[in-house]
Length: 121
Length: 110
Image (tube, rainbow over all chains, first blue to last red; front, side, top):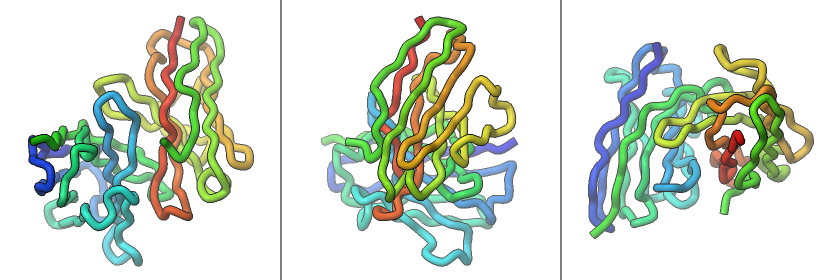
């Protein structure tokens, strides 16, 4: 059974930093492309970024609102993907989901339960 | 403002059919595959359709997808009260080099 478990969410002040983790199991982690998707309270889904499996050219992609502030990395030995967020803004608040991609790199087949990030002073 | 456009809500009676549209452009839907997701409020989204019309294992054939040009549709037949949820389309935008979603459509089963 595929499982994804996010952690690291919490309350952070504007301008601050936070690192989210997502531990995966039940699938071939090292071959998986992993995405982050967020959802502001009462709003729709917003794609944040993705990391390809190691060795793939152009390893990461980011949504324009987070490019330059967020960094996605992975540690295949720990079957964990990370989302490091800097210069956080109020509009970055929401539930952050970790997902695997199915065939195309952006078709999101398995999702974690999400972790809540609140950016507020 | 979402890159992909969906109606905010649709409604139909149990047993009926509903269609949810998703409109984009040549940089996204027109040249990439579309997926659909179902989200019951308070839970994580669920993968419903990929590659425009294919169903993952376990998804009933009441759910079907199609794509034509720069638009995609999700059809749900034999509506059940358990189908009440928010539905999102998603794809890749080649110009943005980013994933994109529609704004979501709330399905109300009357």
